[in-house]
Amino acid sequence: MVKKVSLYEYFVEKTWSLTEEWYGSLSQDQSGVYSSRDPKVVEVLKKQNHDFHVNFSSIFNKGKEEFSKHFQEWVTAIAQDEAHLATPITNIIQEFFRTQEQYLNLVEEYAALYEESISLEEITVWKREIVKTFSDIILRFSCENAKAAEEKSNAQQQMIIELSSPVIILADKIGLLPLIGEINAYRANVMFENTLQKSAKHGLERLFIDLSGVPVIDTMVVHQIFQLIKGLNLIGIQTSLSGIRPDIAQTAVNLGIQFKDIEVYSTLAQAFKARELIGN
Image 1 (cartoon, rainbow, N blue to C red):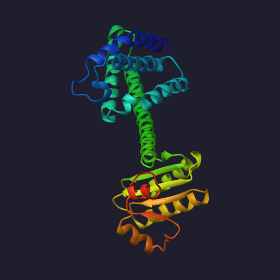
Image 2: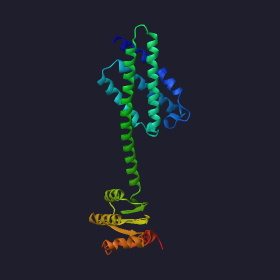
Image 3: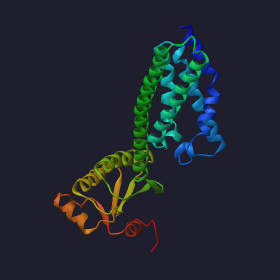
Image 4: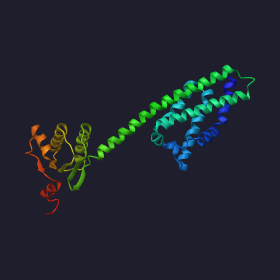
């Protein structure tokens, strides 16, 4: 136990030198956060690396449960860090292994200083503990990083979808929903919900829905659009539909959708003109 405490103290004394040694030996062809030369980014990166060493050193000073808890906080923070999320995970894992090599070398240095009192068996045990702990940290980080990356991707996708179905206020109680790009089942559902909420929030009485920017519309999407129109009518919002191409009209007819209660225009300009939003 005395030797472990002494080894811990030896590690702690080396934390900043380990960080400087690690940063100084970074490969020139690294990418992501490791390639940055921005002083602020480098400062944060070094601080994160130093925090790693402070935490890792305690492997020989704390109980396993306490060590695991403290290190999990570091792992989660780095996995969710934007700069690390923008860095290929293979590069990050490579740096974990390079850092592991630093600690294996430290054990050798420590053993050389006290070779008369340290056995080969003790050195082997310490090295195994270091390798096992690094394996656990890498596994934890990989799981947390994948989770954070998925959450970020989902959030970005949600934002893109919401931005791709905006309700634009044209005049008092009049809005426009310009649909652009491919509409899949998920986007159609989000569009339905967002449009109803935004239209009600702005107190709209009429909403222009323009389909001229949608390249392909299948049966499901046509059905969803007309369900949206019904939903808007139920909350007292009249609709004007523009940009309907022959293929969209054919799909609607095949579905048995009736246009008799819907104002339909070939272009958005015609819809605006009919409602006197633009002049002749």
